[in-house]
Length: 210
Image (cartoon, rainbow, N blue to C red; front, side, top):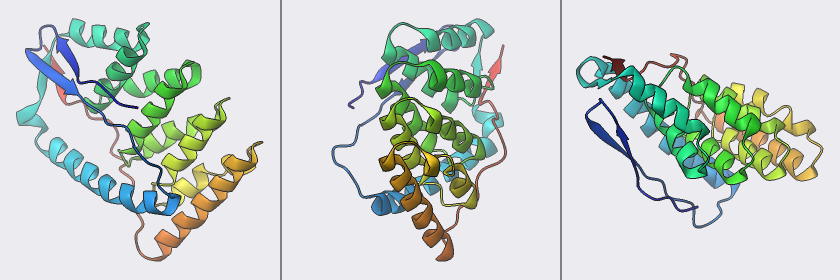
């Protein structure tokens, strides 16, 4: 799915933030996807460590009303607005973003919004993001469960294998097959010394309330 440049003007913050996203134009095999996302994950983790180490000098300053409005936009009637607000709150490491994402994964009726949110979470190799993606393994839609399995397969760690356990018992044969293949490939990557250590530091907001 192609995304528009989304401009979010936060009143009182004095800054503009742009969210852009590109959809995939072709399908990758599961093994190739793991190797590609492993490289992307390392870059994201490095960026996050840099962001956290420089938080004191680069912290955004916002009014409480601005953050409140942004949180309310996660319930907007427009699907792209909901998704953009959730992604922005997640990137800002807002402490309420995990709850908002959990509610979205449980109640959102638009499949593309849920699969897009899973893609966003998968870029951040943390214990929190893995646990949120795992919630989608219980979704009523097969495509969402398949997307969750694919996303979890990019986490090269034992925690990911454990998270795939419910999918290995899924009612759909395709989901079970993908989960078993993903777990096998993760084990192979771990055995070759490519295991990832999940980020367990939790959320640390990159903004302060004025």
